[in-house]
Length: 210
Image 1 (cartoon, rainbow, N blue to C red):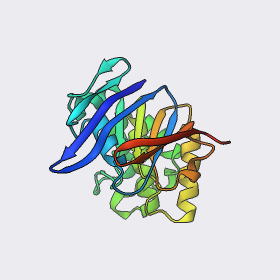
Image 2 (cartoon, one colour):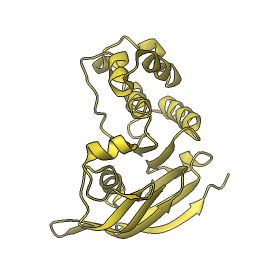
Image 3 (cartoon, rainbow, N blue to C red):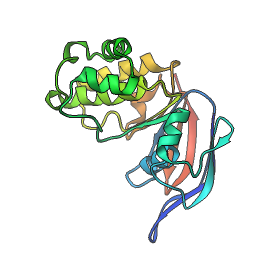
């Protein structure tokens, strides 16, 4: 589904990605590693928000290395950012409608993501946990083939972490996902394979232990 060949990204004198290679079939994957290891940069580069310094990216056999983010999104890759990008003054329903283009589907997605009670609420009034759920819900509503989820557990309390895990279990099998996390153990039982990033390269990997 996704193939990354010798990918590098350099900012000035800082090497963020260093000859990274990855070959993924459809499924759910976790990228973990310390701050500065290149996790977010890798997702942004796959999604077209950053251009690689060198290397190539293929999606479903088609090279997308130099494609803009909008074109990559239309092909089926959507990134949900760690800082939610939503329309703050619009309701949850309208945000989901803008993603799905279908009012009925917007309500169905709201219910799936435990946002049914907040559907008419302005987004700026949502809790941090509900904002995270909306962020992932909007990515899901686009019907993307591959969801890139950047630190979906960041800033969540225990209750909302459990809610997010329940959602990710529900999404498994419906969409392919690449999820970055500082807490890979949370994704045991969800991700099919785990990849450790260090110094901008894949330092190791292991299969789902459960």
